[in-house]
Amino acid sequence: MNDIIHLLPDSVANQIAAGEVVQRPASVVKELMENAVDAGASSVQVHVADGGRTLVQVIDDGKGMSESDARMSFERHATSKISSANDLFSLTTMGFRGEALASIAAVAEVELNTRRAADELGTRIVISASKVEIQEPVAVPVGSNFKVKNLFFNIPARRKFLKTTQTELNNIVAEFERVALVNCDVEFSMSHNGTEMIALQPSSFRQRIVNLFGKRINSQLIEVGVESPLINVKGFVGSPESARKKCALQFFFINGRYMRHPYFAKAVLEAYGAVLPQGEQVPFFLCLDVEPSRIDVNIHPTKTEIKFEDEHNLWRIICAAVRESLGRFNATPSLDFDDEAIPDIPVMDFAGNAKTSVAAPSIKYNPDYNPFNRRSGAGDSGGNQWDILYRGVDSDSKPLDLSPFDDDITSGCSSLRADDVVHEAAFKEEYAPLTQYKGQYILVPVKSGLMWVHQRRAHVRVLFEKYRALLTGNGTPSQGLLFPERVELSVAESLALESVSGELSSLGFDISSLGGTTYAINGVPTGIEGLSPADLLLDLLHTAMEQLHEPRETLLERIANSMAKQVAIVCGQVLSVDEMKTLVDDLFSSTMPSRTPDGHLIVHIMYDNEIDRLFAK
Image (tube, rainbow, N blue to C red; front, side, top):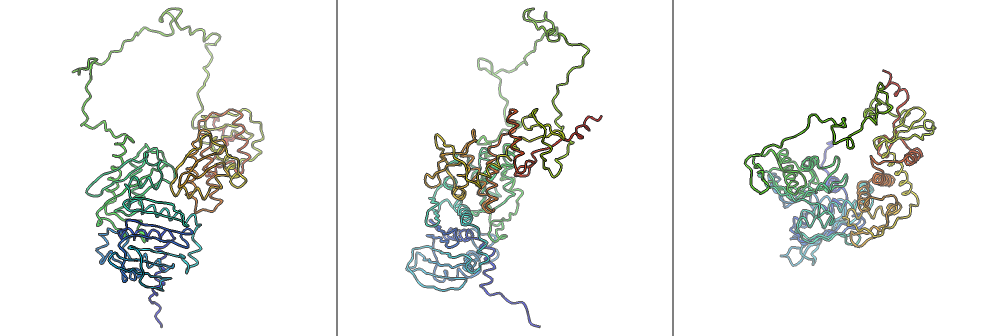
């Protein structure tokens, strides 16, 4: 019987490895930028075309490679970073496996031009699908110039799964930011289809954050700096005012390498305690320095997940470091009143001299004073004549109970029947006596009982249907601002604005570019009085950034829902009877009056038999 196990050809093995290392154009940008940093580059240029599909080019002025090194760099597991297994626990470089270039060359057309400072001529190598087509000497600047063309040209199944150009570009920007953030002493630039998008000069860490994410974040940053035998923590966290529900900028760097670590992210949030609203996130940019032997960076192909030797103690140090910084900048209370080191505050007299003993103030009162006795007051003319209030009232009558409804009045009530759909037949009665309860619910008598309507959720449903119709229709005219509002966006936010500019215009936004990532809001939708146009725009852009991978219809619904939540009335807002009637009418004219777009219950009916049971005893 013939043997069935055999070795795979190198080209096939490289394509399999590429499936782990090269997932999309952003993966190529990450690997090449990290190689440039490892090469000691002081300047790195990134050029992409068509979202990285047709071209990803990274140019650096690092130390370059010799002819033999340039050829060997495309071999699988060829590396200059390690020579034994023990070296895996003393890594100080970004890359080390020797898989990146081999994987990229297996699924793309790659051209490399490189030269060392000691060489007169450099080397040009052209590889297509792991096959070397050209290797020749060439006159080029010192450093390396990688051109990766037609990614996945030989794997059509992989290429068709790439997302839209805008989505792939957003992923490239995200990888660019992660490398550029922590390497502040390096000059970085990025262009797309020949247009420069980002230009970063060497700067401090704080300035690099501001240059990438906009000037508005500068005033929200709180510095963190703690040194300990286990870990050094430095960087910045956002003030509580910077909290947001989505798209918070959160970055961890371990020994100069970006990583994801949900456990440590919880340590940061824990430091804020009750100061941070429930469900909201804060931005943070934290650099962690740990002895390389205490971590393992070799547990994930993209090296974004790292295993730590003593995570629990590191969690406590990170939490304490952030809490100490928040207290130092008065973001959270930091004074411990039980600390014995706090001295007693001396009591001073009016002359400024310290008193040795202080007597408690005495309380004087008249035990015979009766406010219902006219003669106990200052005289007949100034006394209280309470008997006037009780004239004509039978002394034997029972007092009237004016206590409010029991807060648990709906605790025993069932949910809406017939799959939570309110039938029109239940709403036929004239409901003139509408009542607002606690500024949150509208009580509507209906034929089958008493209907409770959550006023804010009802308004969200009504506005959602309105905005969804605008997004899929011809839109609405914009309400011009007397003074246009200027807003500075990050690169990712600017890309999101470009992708949904037509939809925002349909909603009523009039936005013009002022150059770069700065924009002017010239007009806004009607009915957003009291809201900040800039904050509303940012919330919509963050919604779009989260949903760029979703179908277009889903994205439009998310934008409409986000807009509705921002504009809807708040709980506690007092409504007139006409306003309540209009809101209920509009609710039951919608396609699904019983639920919000997020699936929350809007309407609940206490049926007559349930009400009767409450008073059966």
